Image (cartoon, rainbow, N blue to C red; front, side, top):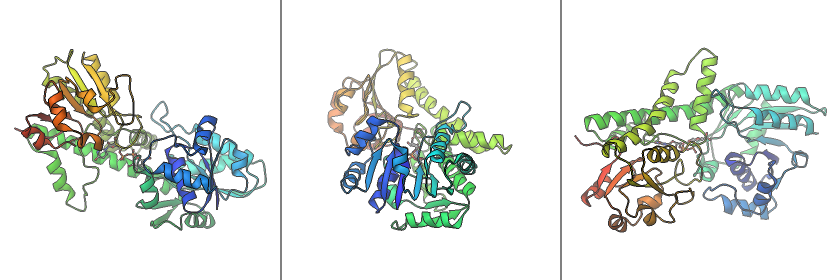
Length: 425
Ligand code: UGA
């Protein structure tokens, strides 16, 4: 099939590459010419394990191309896939201006019947609205159907998720459009759920919000564990052994960040309020998440008796999670700001991202540090040369914001280890 992909962010780029790899002819469009030239030369614009190899192979085989020209990409396309951004609007709602602009371009450009597939995360009802918008503004006498196909890719695992995800959700109002989607994905061994468009749109929000609730729930349990002297990792293990609960997304830490959970929880809570059916559990999860970073900062402040001035603090990790170069809504930025406001001298190291305070290595970052603060659980930190780190720091003190380091081993080696939900009584 011939597929045109509008938007070359995480979703567009990874999905476009996947579709080329499973045999389709894909053209990805973006307005940014420099970005398009870079991608056409096989160099990814994002850090995503496994992507570069696939990008290069499919460009070489001429199954994957990049252009700034919509008309060229839409010509003879069976499917136009929308993967443009839906950022947070001023009141927490999803800003649909990129979607609307893309709809207008489609309406004025397509000359053959086509199915428009919306992968961007959009509030329920948007697919209907986009179909109406396109049909109202069509320049040529063609049929355009809109299908919802939400994405469930995790940054850092996006390639793996694209090929081996848990499910494909297709929301359509017309059987042929739904069948075309099934055909598009027939080479993948993944269960397909067919629903109507609004349910498909809702599945995406309900799933992200549920995962966010799970994280905020375990973070509140962690605070209680701190108060009573239980260990939240053991509690999560015990809870997770119940298959009705599951262990995934029960890692307590400094709260969720990234480009999805914060934006999507706000958007669905906003929509629910508008509909007079507030999602109070999601609202609480958002609130808990906001407080979680502050609680972590307070822990450090308390330890130093509010005397953080001139303390040298080594921050390990900037990205909102490992294996990505994404800094959107990353807790690291707020933590660095707060520590600097309290007079601390901050040094930072992330395996991929640089910052004005970046050191060139873990060892340089921790040299003479009064405390290490683990913000992102990159494997590089867990398997770092801890015997050398031990000799390099001024104080053997760790605040582990992800409960990712081997607490007992570090304690045996004389470190003071402070995690989340692990205070001993
Ligand atoms: C999330 C969803 O997991 C994907 O299914 C979805 O497609 C994507 O949003 C999206 O809407 O595009 P992502 O934001 O890439 O993916 O990353 P996650 O692995 O879900 O992590 C999100 C945040 O939650 C990170 O800050 C992570 O550190 C935090 N987290 C995750 C925890 O604090 N504890 C956990 O147990 C799990």
